[in-house]
Amino acid sequence: MIRLGTERLDRIVAVGAHCDDIAIGAGGTLLAMCLARPGLRVDALVLSGGGGDREQEEQAALTAFCPGADLNLTVHKLPDGRLPAHWDEAKGAVEDLRAQTEPDLVLAPRTDDAHQDHRGLARLMTTAFRDHLVLGYEIVKWDGDLGRPSVYQPLSTETAERKVRLLQEHYPSQRHRPWYDREAFLGLARIRGIECNARYAEAFAVTKLTLDLGE
View (cartoon, rainbow, N blue to C red):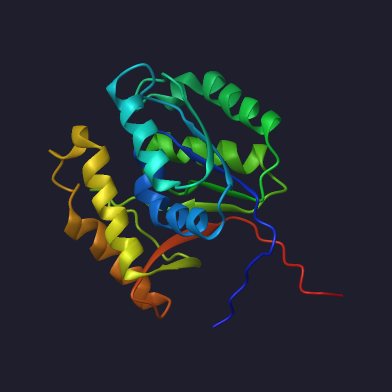
């Protein structure tokens, strides 16, 4: 198995269409990175849920998922499930983010996600951040759209358990959902761990990847 890493990882971008998307899709990876790199800058953007309880949940959650990081979170107020009808506003939010940061890594939804909000945001990100490594996270849901990921971030048992605990603690508005439980989150992480020879893992899709392995 080839393992590629980077010595320079000072600033990352994490985006979600909805509050909790980032934490569900990449919460373990955020924990691992922030614990390994105190002071890491995290610029986070969420397109919906602003101005209410959901924004408060997201602020508290991402603060917990990014311990010791320099976190900058912006939550907009696009209506849930209506991103295609608010394309200009979504595009403007992404372009504003791009103008403010030059990240070493971008965490975003997958471009082939079945949810129109996730998919739309993902396509905006690969255009706005075309010279950056964009990792597309996955979110389990009834659509059955999980694919064959190509990139893995192994998670220790402690980190995987901490992710699930934080998800349950910080998003009380989602606890009633039938898929929002410990078994679903740890189950997917265990499967992805098997696929990369680890106990647990988060998996990502990559649209483009440029290697610098020497001349």
